[in-house]
Length: 307
Image (tube, rainbow, N blue to C red):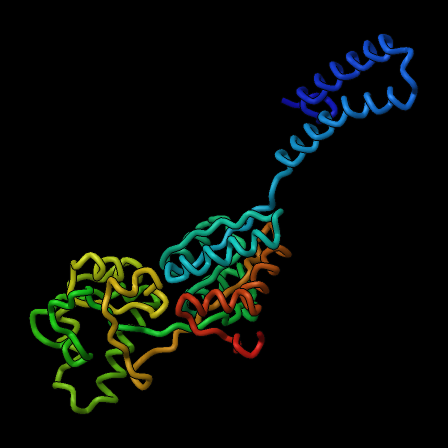
């Protein structure tokens, strides 16, 4: 509860009690020296100021910052958010993770967001067309690559991309509406072009083995982790340090792989534009890039040379 002057009623009551007590004490100890009386008064009043300071600290609102980010950024951005909050204690960062197209649609439908961080430039274009971001404001802040994963026991015996076309396998892709799904299809095209020794109809046979198309890459990873399919294609960053032993990885060669560029931009509708710009700068700076690198992303700067 607040009084007319904005101070909480509780500290005001404490103050009145303390003043009354001090008056009684001063009258009772009139024979005390002035020095002792002042010392006694200070000792009585000090807890009051501590109480007021605590109340003011609790009532000071933090500046909220909302970041809409691709699902593949979940772990890395959570750590970046905590690190940013420690450096800026007056800011509270909230994330909304999901497939980039779904996030873009939410923003277009009026969801309040300050920053968009997506796994490709394609999903930012509708926001630019709606003048929610400036076209040149979007920046590449990190890169990612694809990897094939299987359950830890790899019971299907998948050891190379050739095995993906073996009839009867159960494979999971991200849906083609999200970047991870688009990149998986590009990988199949690249493999068919660069590997003349692959069986005819390699691409088509792999797609026959796909049993589900998930709404985001995290869902693909989880299906493989749970053993609900024989293999899936995810980002290298999806394989965290904790879960690396729970799946097997089959690398994709550079001539067949995709370098996924991730873009970040401050939205024109942001209510805390300066704070949002500070967050973007943090992501692009050494500390943010180092965190992203630890989670399997490829930095846009040479983090080793900046140490």
